[in-house]
Each structure stands twice: as C-alpha cells, then as structure tokens.
Length: 320
Image (cartoon, rainbow, N blue to C red):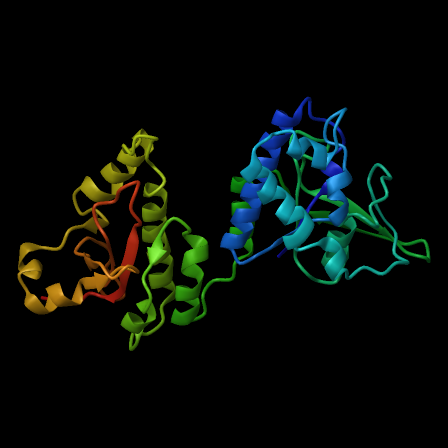
C-alpha cells in the first residue's frame, strides 16, 4: 500500500504550536507504523508552507517549539529524507481530480493517491487531526474529457492504531516458512527476533494453521512487552494478559518441566546468544499442539527495560 500525508488536512486550524505538535506527533507515529510494515509515508515538499495556526505556517510552528531534537527530526524528514510525493509521480498532467465538495485535488497528495488507486494500486492517506479530513474513506472523483466520471474511496487514518489495522488488513498471509519469518519484525515490533529462526523450521511441512497460531502467541508477547508503567511495573492490562495466558490451567505459555531442564541435550538446544554475545537460556515457551507439537521459546522474565528475545520457533524438541 502506498501512503501519503494529506497536506490539505493542514488549513490553519490549530490554536497554537503546542496543539499542532500533538497532532504532528501522531503523524510521526503513523510514519513509524508504516515502517514497521515495510511501507513509506510520502509527504509533499510544499507541506512546509501550509498554514497550521492563524499566525504560523508549518516551518514556523515547528521551530516555535524550541526543542532542538524535535526540530531536527521534523525538518530532516520534510527537507531531506522524504520520500516526497513529487519525486515519484504517476499522475497525468491532463487528469482532473476533485472531492465531493468540488475541492480540486489534482496536484495534491490526495490526487496522487487517487491516481494510484485508479491504476490498480492500493493507496491510503494519513491526515492531521482535528481537521476537515477526519472521516474515512475520502471520496475522490476523476473527471474525464468525455464527461464521464469515475470515483474511488481512499482509506484515511488519523491515528497510528487506525493505520496499523489498515495495514494489517492488506498484509498477504505467508506462503512459506521464509515468508513467515520475514513478516515477524513488522507484525510484532516490540519483540526482538534472533537470527537463524528459519533453521529450526527446516523439514517441517508448511502449515497455515501453525502460522496462524504462532501469530496469536507472538501477539500476546508483543502486547505484554508494552504493558509497563514509567516505573517499570506491569500495568493492569499486563496482569490480565499474564492471568489469561500464563497462570491458568493449561495456559498457552509455560516454563519447561524439570525433566526437560535436566536433559543436557535440551538445555544446550535452549541456550542462545543475544546480539551482544550474552548467554540466553530460553525455557519459557508458547505452545501449539496440532498438527504437530510446536513451540516458541523466548527470554524470561519479561521486563520493561530488556528486549524480549524470540529464540526458537519450531517443533517440540522433547517428546514422550
């Protein structure tokens, strides 16, 4: 999916630069979300001139924060990094796009997103909020020279959670184990996947069901890694996850048994190295019971200040 910042959603509506910054933070979070799904968020070079408060344009409002790191982050993105809408145009200069209220968008990011849609590509928008563009979808009409009109509905997101749901809906399911491993960092950005996970899957027949259940387990761990307060204590939401998935009878997650821990071959197999070369013993695991006994082993305990390493995904190594 091709994503575009909707520059028309900046129309001088913010009371001050602090209110604009809060909305801009959401757009930056959407940019990060897109990157987690191996997508980019295109921005127009002219957005820097858009009016964002009655007194200030984009550049002035950013610089009014007096936060050097924030200013550098935003201006480097807007001035240097992009990617920029203008550098990868697909639209024809003779085309004419407008919204339902007759607002002309041919030369705007919305127009480029519509062009891609009409060419059979998936495209979406990210808008600032509050604005006149908080609804989804946004309807765009393509007026042809012969008087005919085509219309499309572009998905529009104002919050990173909304964009994540959208991108998730467009993700193709893995077709093989290599696809499965390749998708993991994007699907579960709060987990750290050790290299070589695909080696443990060799010889195992690819199973969409195993993939689906693995995604369920990894989603629990991914959510749990975010459930800590500023002091590093697990939140109520985190405790609920632990109660539901770690503490109940026949829970999906558990520690290895004493007999497994006393098995020298198993202990060696569950000993890994983190990126710094430190030893990790990963007895804790998530379980899938069919069509084969399948395990996901990870570092434990799960803490706010340490990465949660996924060390092994594959068939159960100890079987009765």
